[in-house]
Length: 200
Image (cartoon, rainbow, N blue to C red):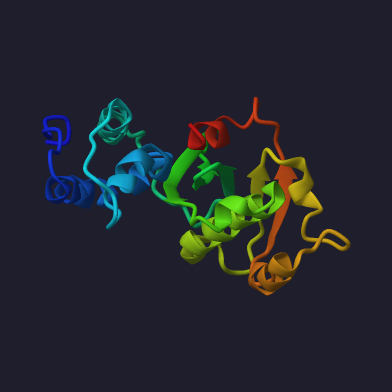
């Protein structure tokens, strides 16, 4: 069905496509980043101008939804870990577990576009925003006494929650982070395959 969806020619047709695609976005990585050019067409003051970039985005979303990876069923007896990443106009994250053979398995994906003000955040605040977004979306799995790890490809995130690095914004987020039992670990982008995929 998704593969055969015709190219939208009006805002109404675009909305009809976005309905099922938004519902299915948790099964594929970086939905918010891929759909971004199409989101611009839905703004109230935007003229309808279906560009090559829009067609590329439309095709990318359809392909992502038809080739989404097989997600693992969450196993409450195994520890979770989270991978998150940020880029210019979106943030994304994945909830993951190791299976019985020690392989990384994705349980769920989430992503969203950054608000205009958020795009002006310093890089470490964007990374913290991505982490906060991940913990909010995966709260039902992560909240409790069991520890988990958040992997980032931004080394300074490990110290961004400690003085003297705390911004006023970060200070507001600390009480939220305190509800969770986690540690942040740095994994370079070349090794952090899922985070790298989230930003594509």
